[in-house]
Image (cartoon, rainbow, N blue to C red; front, top):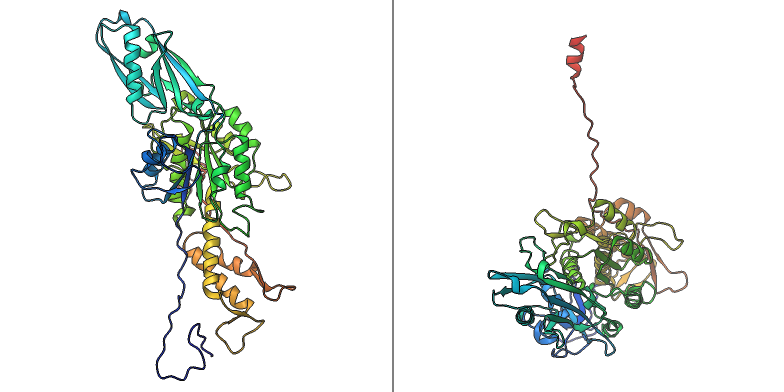
Length: 504
């Protein structure tokens, strides 16, 4: 066997000992980046549209106090404590309109004892003391002040200049996301009825024109971002997502090989979510649907993205289903507004992911499916139904790519290598590397059935380009335990075989 060197020349005559060091290659280790996309305030110092690697405590300075993206970061960090998190800020659209709402006080002069009024805005509790001396006008000023000092508040409040009993609420960001800011009076069920009796609520509405997310997508370059979480689900945004992640020229194409997945959340009723899902068919897109939760969609998206990024980056964890994982900082809808088992079944056949609620009110992932439903011929296809399959695909192909490039990065290619020359490889050598890599992925719980893989694997030199090897890899993914079906048969009395014989 001839020993090959990269740096020691073969014609050196000066004695005696020379050593060169070369990397032997290491197994692939995943670091899945989570990218959050949301709106910033003009008070933030970050450069709009450019991804920033985040550290705790930077969010308010970068994006502005109480801004959408600052709150998304805090939520994602709470759900993924050790994740590498990046954030890309969007400025409000210059032509955008901020959503508005109103609170009008009435009849407080009838209060006979000091009381506390409690309301919730975007799930954030606001409490104000009502004195027996208060009037509707005086308490309106008190409540507006309490709203403005509440931490993480997505609206500002001011007393109406025309009607001093009325508080005007304005979303701090322009765009449709402000329409999703809820106003509740009895979220936990332990509040008194003061707000219900003495407060008239006009829901947040009329927000228009979200920012253009393609400005962020254009700035991603060739950096890997495996999970992208954002609250935008309008047709223009989802079209941009398809362009970014498609298999032909996007980040999943064989040329780019960057991969990635978009996670968003939508508040709508069952019929609206079903219609949305049936109009989509993208395996690189997850839409988590919910109805009337006090938590706005940017928090739902950040929590889901954080949990997905944390659990779908390393083997064998990425092969386990996400079901039952808690979504921290997310409030459950009231019981009447939660999707029941029949409704979730409908959503899972219409391309919409969903949640479930534990007894204690904790919101958990139920099943995080993609919008992929049909193959190219329009026939039902469940190949890429679950997001775990996409995570396995990203991990598995990167693992095999590193395995092959470690072993064959700089080699000559021949049909055979009878003398075992270093620096010369064959299709059979590459095949052996791939098989060994697949076996390692089986041990990591990503793929299965080595015998079938090895039987059907094709590794051959190209008939036209003598410098090229073509490979067909039949990847058999490890699945997730989703359903346990039990046939429990009841009998009035059963006897053993011996007892039956004795009775005869």
